[in-house]
Image: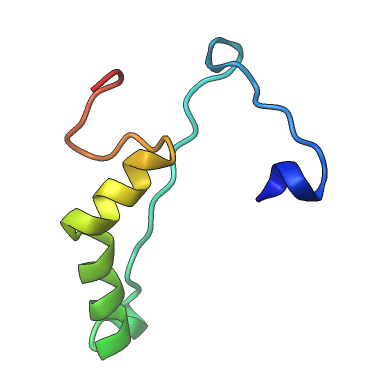
Length: 65
């Protein structure tokens, strides 16, 4: 955990615009089994739960949900 290894400071939400992140599967990887597994993992209910736990707002959700 970061708090035990050093210091950090959470920047208040009202001081910045939301940071958007995403992923893509490139044409080169489109037929690769690992890319398909990764995409399936990222859209699974368990992964969505984990991402929400760490403060991510996911597609189809709204702030404060």
